[in-house]
Length: 209
Image 1 (cartoon, rainbow, N blue to C red):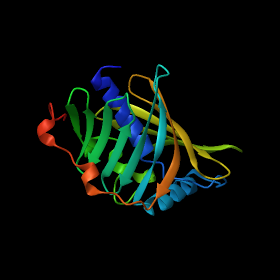
Image 2 (cartoon, one colour):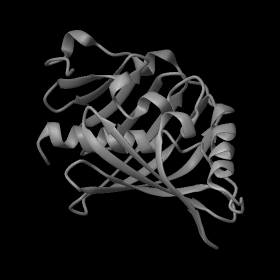
Image 3 (cartoon, rainbow, N blue to C red):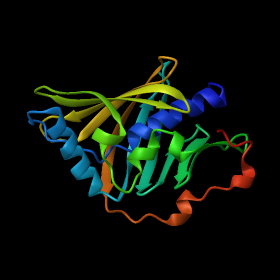
């Protein structure tokens, strides 16, 4: 496994991309602004969501897990064994927990890509640097570039052009390493227990600023 700091950066970027699972634009819209408006409208109508994911790391390593989102501000990504890491946001911080070492890294939510995706109201046009929006017969692709506490990152999100369902995305981090994630079994309007998003700050090995 990669060192926890590098692994944490990749997980946090992957988490940011995963928070866009509810954004399902129509496949045949004539302008970028209209596509983004449809993403905003759909996502702003979704307050809770859960599902499963499969993640492929820069070296081809495969991990799986589940996630649950409760906007505003909260998300939990739980990776299946043998991975001993999960990612949680409690409304003010994003925490990468290493359960093997019983340690965690903490970043302010406001300094991560999750800040605009978990906001009460989403406006990708105003709050994110959308580099391109494109559509063909098979896919709608939205590319977002974001400068964060982790450095410059790029998210390439791919939606099914026929059904408008999110299929997968590729995250390129500040080191140029790609992480690809596919999602399935998506459910909206799910019950989200507030205890799922609890963060024990006394466990932190240090708060990153």
